[in-house]
Length: 312
Image 1 (spheres, rainbow, N blue to C red):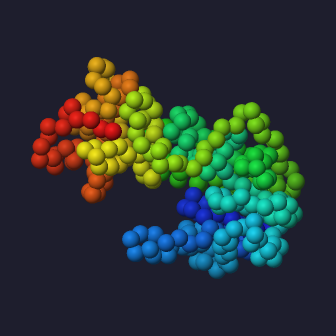
Image 2: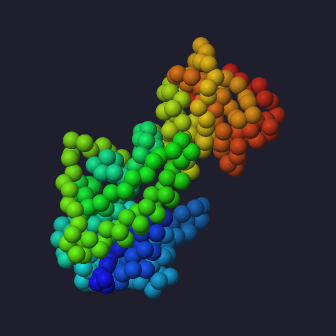
Image 3: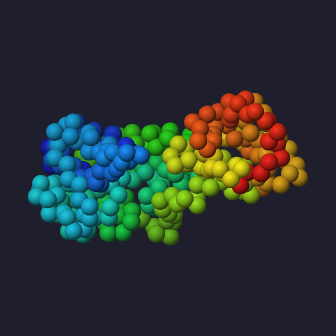
């Protein structure tokens, strides 16, 4: 098989298996990642996950702040193909038109569904029953390029953001390595997306993290697991933020209790009235405390008389 000169562009953990697969089978001549960020109270500079893998493999890493203005160094590596996966910046046409085999992207949805930067979160939050990976040609629009290949995976009720993220990350590596030989040999499909079928998964906003108990138990259940573990859904209890990482849809008959009020304390956790039933919060992080099971939180309460209190 031809030893491609590959430039890989990616940033977070999701892109790591894809990069590792490329390093194993092709000549990755450079890696492009977002600039390092300062994190934590002490503002320690932390390298991106993709950068760490590249440096361990002895690969040059480029980290332009604005790729539309800082792309000459990338093209100096004369890539035959550019592969992107969760990179985080829109590529200029100059880059898109340079490689012999084009610029291809590994996207975590079944395009044209869920275009954008948060397709895994939104697949769960929006109640999709399946999602997958799309290998696509890139163009100047956001995830609008022609589809090359796709592979599906079912979304289970037991999935949350973390489990689906990890499964799709490995699926992306697998599908890319299956697809690249056809691209090299010119045998790959090229299917135009139907924009009428498009849905969008823009980056999560703070307002989307807040739990609205007027919604149905299923909608709240999907929201909680679609944001778990990061950034985490939240509510306000006695004016303080409480994160919620897991829940159960209750089978208890509905009552006239107003939504947002605690209905009961049970072995599974904290029951809360919703717009159409009850949901049980099972894993939480109270303000100023560590993440814990809701049952542990209940056991630690000095005053357990919280039934009937409102969660906002």
